[in-house]
Amino acid sequence: MNKFDYYYWKSKLSELQINNIHNTIEDNFESYQQVSQGASDLNGNFKKSSIVKEIKYKFIKKELEDVIDFAQICNKQFYGYNLYPLSDSIISCYNIYSSKNKAKYDWHSDISRLNCSDTKLTLIINLSNKYTGGEFELNSGNIVEVKEFSNPGSVIIFKSDILHRVKPVLTGERRTLTIFLDGPKWI
Image (tube, rainbow, N blue to C red; front, side):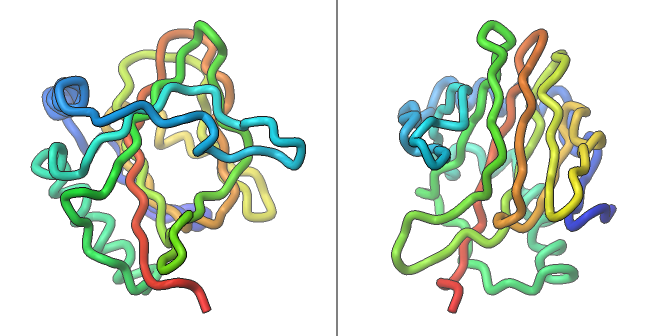
């Protein structure tokens, strides 16, 4: 369904699929992302206070076949970007926002750090159980809370250059998996 330049699939993944993804990531994640890899403000302060585990797409792609198909259909019908195929070695980000430190991610947009490609679409999957706070918001002139994304197993896709944030998590843990869909450099 479409709302405010994003598309979502409410509760797409089952509890079993979510648990399988958690277990696969715990068994196969490659590294922890350095804080410096996240967005920062003009003063150099980092905007993200979550833990990020990096995992190669090859380990989770079987569980995500329908999700990636959804992303490709959304791109074809609504965005029309020329996207590179997802290779097995593409890194996905498993984000853990804990209430212990009121983890959040302030306003930012997603960009590529590569010289030959740009991030076109951001795909996020809610792999959480129970938490409060951690609301996901988009801002392309008006701030909109994406309430549909608060359900476990839900999927959202949006243009990567749209400002977005995760508000502080108040109780529990908010866990998501982010996949960036890249294509040729913007001209």
